[in-house]
Image: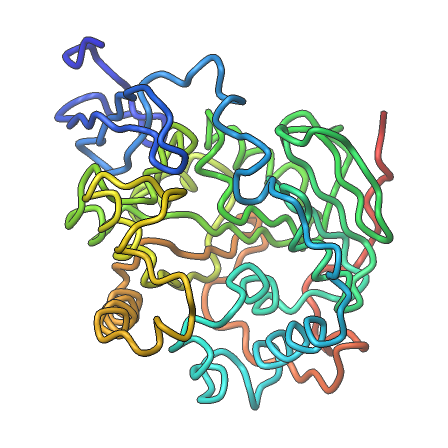
Amino acid sequence: MDEAAPFPCRICGNSGGNGHLALHEMVFGLAGEFDYVTCGRCGSVQIRTVPDDLARYYPAEYGPLGARRSNRNGPLRVAWRRMQFAFTVRPSFRAEGRWYELLRRWEETDLALEAVARHRPRLDAAILDVGCGRGRLLHTLEELGYRNLRGIDPFLTAERTEGRVSLRRSRLEELPSDERYDVIVLHHSLEHVPDPIATLVAVERHLLPDGEAIVATPMVAEAFRQYGADWYQLDAPRHLNVFSPRGFELALGRTGLARVDRYFNSTSDQFRISERYAHGEPMTRAGALYLPVPFLRVLSLREARWRRRARELNEAGEGDQAVFYLRKRATATAGDRGSVPTDSLVDPPAAPIGDGRAAPGPRG
């Protein structure tokens, strides 16, 4: 690959002063080297050429596409999810409160569920999960009483409908233009798309006028500066475009979306897994750098230092992943939305976002 060839950043359009990285697939230890470019303007990192056989790097064992446990409706698991959801949306236990902070301190929260819970959608809101995998988040929301749940993923092996959850094999840009949602979730999926600007434009198109998008994505920040090519969130070649905080804001400026809120939620994974990669160990192989038993992690001083450092980076806006809340620019109002009292997980919040209108049914 000619590293001197001009490469216009897909995010901000810059083609000057770029850096280069040679990366390898490290989740499964597959062969091959991938050329990535670091934008000299916005600092985002992106693959130079998207592989033609990208589906090869999404086997059935890959994270969100992996088998969903059959006991998802077990009473203890449902109770645990309900508790986390309640701690997030209730003013007395919201994410800034001390009780929820205990869960976060030990990294025992469900990050995807927290991102949705902070939004406080109505129980009848039309929710679309982009890059849904096997639908874990949607089925969790179903357990909590949500009833209008759709998911799309281009790497699904089969479409299916289970209960109130409908999963389709599709990209967001391929949906019918009249299909609208109250909430569109992209939980660690935006970095997987070849053209993130086109995807964000599609998000705007498929939002209802007062709808909101929830985008969780890796951030090029301190962990990248520390580990470089060994930073695990680069995830070559699946992560095609990894934003910096500035890059994400520049990307929004090329769309009709505006940010109304943001928080960083990186974890000790940015150190634990990156250290593993730095020692040449793929994620799926056994090795001494992992402490797979949660109880052992609690006892580890190294793990405690990593958790503390992750919290410090989040507070400084330097965490290696963040959650953004976006609205159509014409209706966006930056700042704190205020607290919404929620006395029950069965009843919707008193001041919801979105009117709960149903989206069209699945096609095809």
